[in-house]
Length: 276
Ligand SMILES: C[S@@+](CC[C@H](N)C(=O)[O-])C[C@H]1O[C@@H](n2cnc3c(N)ncnc32)[C@H](O)[C@@H]1O
Image 1 (cartoon, protein in one colour):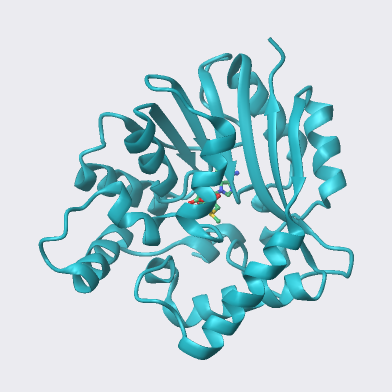
Image 2 (image 1 turned 135 degrees about the vertical axis):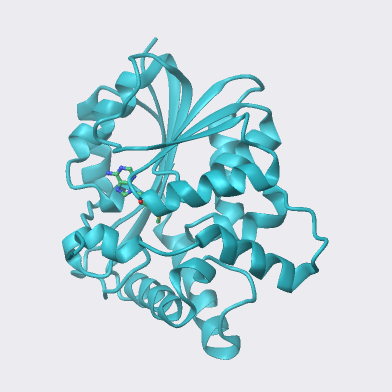
């Protein structure tokens, strides 16, 4: 059966098994399986746990709060937030293989009671209104065609006064990026907005903007370094290439860097609030 463009891009077998095997091969059979130890492998976005740390600083989750991770991937950021801040995180993701991996890694890290994973869509969230104290979404918006529904749904499930942190890549001024990219093998699964379009989308949904940062300049510097490192040393032992495929991931990362350097990608980090 032929798959839709998103599934054929992300679908993969035994993700958790391969991640645990890679961790043990790199750090020994007795390595404690913690959110921290898995972080180089299971934060599926540029700059991995460093980017999650910065996002968490903006979002400022509090112990015991209910947090929603929209497009939670294999659950690395959700486990990391729960472990570090003592909050309850619900992750929702469209990909069954990612949800299965997230659940297996929740069990392996002993975080199953504080991290719940649901298979479902960001544009049709299966939660009652005002269910969450805070929410975040890292590098998901590029897969979402209907941005208005994405932001509408995020606003609906947040409590009044709740914060939403979003980071995403977007369209650059110099034309389409070079595919395949980490979130899409072809343009069929990629929906890129310019920073200004993203700003208009969050405002149109009714959010109040607390911070809106165009991070493209900072991304250029780190992408240049990443490309040099890839060309000189290849991939590090641990990374999301363990489940996306090593050979393919070199191309995905190199295309991201080249697209940024050619002015074909941008990056924004946004913190918004549902008015209380
Ligand atoms: C690049 S990954 C980022 C994963 C995760 N946020 C992280 O940073 O580790 C993008 C994720 O968005 C998910 N996704 C794409 N479209 C979605 C949708 N409509 N609803 C829920 N998840 C979606 C994909 O399945 C994938 O897990």
